[in-house]
Length: 555
Image (cartoon, rainbow, N blue to C red):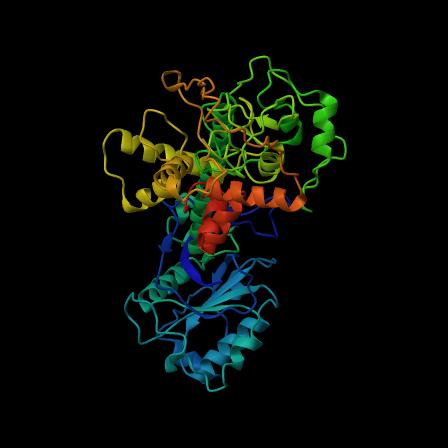
């Protein structure tokens, strides 16, 4: 609604007494007509009666005052005698724009009243100028005392059209042009030329256009610019977000394929804690320790069913499928793995006096009591408590691979690459290396918990109780131990001790829970069961918001 520019041009208006009904006004060529443009220095005094973004258009004229008014003589120095009046315009419903000097409050009120009376409803705006202003600068502020009429501003509400103030020099030029274009066509500038193009009975008058802020739009130009910039920014942010979401999805698929190919062990790297499903656990072989014959399905199922899990959160099935037996199962001798590394009880070999201990063989060829290891693998971890190798088959991948798992795997890979090339890790990377559960590498110094446990136990072997043995990993081919034959003693010195038959302790619920807790302690620091949830608990809120829009940023 604020005036931004003013343009005045010349129109040819058909004489309604002679013109055809379809004949309309035409713009006179600037070569033969008056043309003026003011692109600034317009002061808006009142915005009453105008909608935002709409321009003001109308024929330029000066209202007639009462001939007896003293304001007529007061206006004479600033209003030419031949200035365009309402009587000089065609008797039609053309829109009007008035122009007059801002004299005393009384004279201004008379001009406003005359504009309201002239062709009621056709005046679209009023332009005033200060008589004392001879320059081209912008008129005083709207709250300046020069614009006061002593009525508390009620004049703005009484007139249903906007009021503007223009510089004095501009107003003098328009007044002079208005006086020149108030006569007949033959008397206006270039009248003889204009009669060759138009009917000499037509009117040649000035037409004013006041451009308000917005230029036809309901929003100011600054807001339009800001909206355009905001739209561009939103487009960039949206495109970047979609690209990063696509990139994260691609990385998740790449990690899934690497896990399926066996290149990445999620739990061994400390990325995500996995457990062994019951159907995979049932496929791990069971056999009687010390006997080459596999355990029958009936015997194994009966013994396993007699030892249910004591954990209410992970109940075992009432009837378990028969265990699978592999033809390539590893069969350690009594000197290679004689003890269950979890409960530290000796395995009882099968003999004529004992049915022997049923053991569970993991893919890494370590053996345990089923009641010691099954619940641990099913509910706590998929890693062997001794060597920290996974008990899951090659190609097994969790159903959901999250962004947190991708970030952890990439971080571990970068740290290992830095260590491999000899670059000193940062303190943060060293902390991760200390807490990471590494895969066992026979060529490297002992790093796993099982290695540290074996060193600690063998160094303190004098503190072991009798009847217990420590657990040991399978020996290599160069370290295979052979059974020594029975020692021969003379009948005179030999004493025959009482025959004792070793019996496997019963797998009570309390013993199973104790064994599970001991296996967890052997495993040491475990990978998080929910990497995404663990990150959410330690990540500030602002990083969560940024990460939801741009995955991988702010983590």
